[in-house]
Image (cartoon, rainbow, N blue to C red):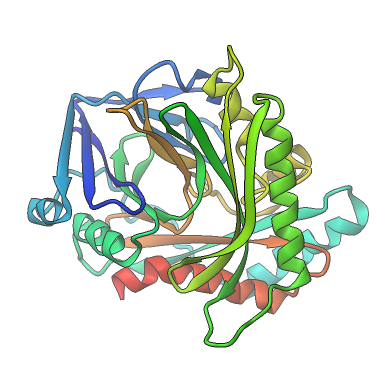
Length: 342
């Protein structure tokens, strides 16, 4: 069966379908990315169950949303009913939030991102139709539906660029801090502003290793569905000899999906989160494919099983974070996918 990725870049009207006959390549490290062209699917943490997947397409088809809607269905890799259910447990979230929060007083960690997931019964809608709905509902987002034997089937509608290129200029962003859109002139809390600062400072320190020409714009407020975020843009050119795989290894995972300091937070999450993030909070996108290199952090996403959808969301935890507010934030983030299947 063929592996494929269907995607639409932000603020564009056209989609691309890339298809590989047979199994895609798997990579064991981010440094290996960049020498070939194709579509990259990377997890939060690389392991035997969640490798980096690289599609080398045999077919690249440019199409409109109407063309996609007319496709009806595509062959999918779907796991079945042997996968344990993951209900949205408030008690479990309380337990893990408390554990994360206590870590600030006994470690050097300043920020952690706590993720959770919830399973929703399959409503029978074809994933291709969900992709079309996600594109129409989220014009500002990178939307992709991908399916391969190593990773299963996922739908992503994310606002966050990890690394993209236009001609010789590269772009990334710090996207952190979240609140619901309201009619009032709500102000960003100190917690949200500090969270954005952590991410922006980290990204700037990463880019300093690879570029002597960095332009910074922000932070400023952007809309993503029913939410607003703080965003800082970084535009830059690479120094001679820089390899894109080394940049990806350094940037990922950013503090927006992991924490500060990066390595300490990363290992703490793996040991304490009680959740297999798999490809949630990894990244995906085309690389050197028909002129496109645009990799996006896999937020606002769900895994599609034969009998259910598994929705993922996370939020940044600082010492001043309040559990109820963080739970509500993850619920609001899940709504981006939930609205497609209600």
